[in-house]
Picture 1 (cartoon, helix red, strand yellow):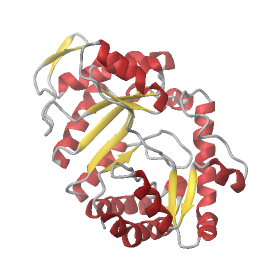
Picture 2 (picture 1 turned 180 degrees about the horizontal axis):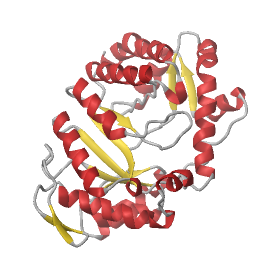
Picture 3 (picture 1 turned 90 degrees about the horizontal axis):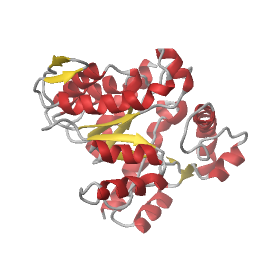
Length: 309
């Protein structure tokens, strides 16, 4: 795991040099495969290795974090990064994680609202009332008013809640974005516009597609089974995207995981136009760093120069 953490930091530095816009970190807890549990700690390390790229934590589960400590840690990362942190707060959905932290799932919404409210108050740098006492969080973040703050969710209720709280919304299901937009307009605030999220599927680059599939298939099967299991155990959202898949043929047919030649990715991004989003998950599902680097080097030498042209 230490090797993978070092590789992740090296890849963050590479992405900064290559001109990527943002790095996205997620967290899960108690996972047998060692899924990153401390996204803000990793964000701090990446901030120290980069200078331009934004770092987005999507998401921290409100119920598993003390709101004041979360406000402090996020403020430290924002200062370390020079104001490059973006934070998404989610309600969580994995039953085993709620059991691990001794939190009742029915507390999810209340804790999420409290956390969002506390973060916004704390990041002013001024004293405020918190659970019946006056507190103050220091240091203030580098970003005036604090890092950009979104609420994550996949339901109409979450979308409208984000609008009422006056924060952004990260829709894990594109279909619920219009509820956020509708509620925002109803409250008299500016129209946030149409949903701009893109395809979040996995892409691995290889000169030989069949060889690429041989290398990444075990990890894709593992990721699909892991997320599918979490969602089936009680999570809302894209259960139709992540589900246990029994064969590589089914995996390939799903379209969620793809192995492309560099020229194919160039053609795809070019066809989408100037607002096309290219998203990579280099070490998805446990892909070894050396295999991940092969894909990234192909992107660097065979894709990016042709897009710039």
